[in-house]
Length: 448
Ligand SMILES: NC(=O)c1ccc[n+]([C@@H]2O[C@H](COP(=O)([O-])OP(=O)(O)OC[C@H]3O[C@@H](n4cnc5c(N)ncnc54)[C@H](O)[C@@H]3O)[C@@H](O)[C@H]2O)c1
Image 1 (tube, protein in one colour):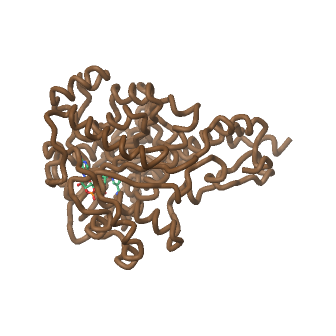
Image 2 (cartoon, rainbow, N blue to C red):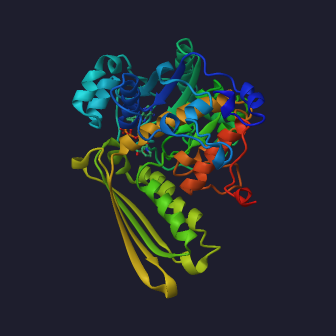
Image 3 (spheres, rainbow, N blue to C red):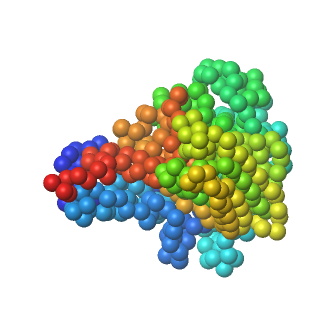
């Protein structure tokens, strides 16, 4: 970063963020469609055969100072992020397939593209997983750890992590595993001591994803939750995160239908247009779709998808516009479509004097193609947070809400769902940690 790009106190603030030296080790529980599309994509970009489209850290810029200053560096030149060449990978799955085979099964990327990076992908083989079919009814695999109780399983994960620490200088864990059954916080989640007792006693409120998070945070490793699972939305994890300077964020990648929803809903509210109903349905044929076909896993996803509209539209503030809104979300497993999900939205809105109108959105998307760049950005930003003295001890990284359907916040705060406020929050956080002026968009000074 040249000093001409910096603000008044930039140099001093910049010095406090540790540089991104050495290898960044990426640890992924769940090496299915999203994880393999992400890893293959990073390798394709490294080899110069594709571009990292959709990645804010790789393609995004950030405006600094006044509009007249013309300072708009790339984000990756403005904050010290790991380079793609420094990323190394490991992970866990209940299936033994290496990343090449798993990517073939997922059928997201073209065969020709996969063949060109096959030798690299074949070197990454998932470690045996911590898994219990009670929590994901539609899956069954053999690459699974065995132990007397959940504490032993946690220790085996910590041993895997310790091993990977020898091969990398810093680490980040990101959950790309399946959606588990719907769980709620219970007594076992209220403190580290209670959780550790629960591990010993095989408490059924402790799902596998929580055991991975516990192992990572105990080892001081940041953790991102890409699924709608409860995982880190728990006092025990927030406590571990703070005391071990291991940032956390989640949950549930905001990729397709909800991404569009959080763009449209704020627009209706900004114009004071009413919404009478919002019906969202999906057909999806990948393994995620199969897992979500189980009512217990679907409930976890449904809660995450439903929360968005109420929080954006604030019916309590605007009863005439949103009090009677009928919101429905459906996901239907339909194998012929594979990973190429189709999401339909029918939106019934109303305008001046209450006259009704309709909007139809038909998003023929590619689930993992949308999710992979989010995985990359979250890893890059969590690693940055871990190296930033201002961010690493905060626990929850609310500034990463941009990437999630159900953003985590401090207890008692309602989450921000509006994509553009989330984007501003993210960029202002980057400006803040680099000692740059925040951008308020007031702009009166141009007319003095
Ligand atoms: N693709 C998207 O747009 C998107 C958006 C939001 C959330 N998600 C979530 O991301 C996750 C991954 O999606 P996907 O399409 O890659 O699904 P997938 O089914 O292809 O991959 C998930 C993998 O996790 C493995 N797994 C399950 N439990 C595990 C455990 N305890 N330990 C280790 N591995 C385990 C499964 O065997 C599978 O290989 C899902 O929870 C999904 O709901 C995806």
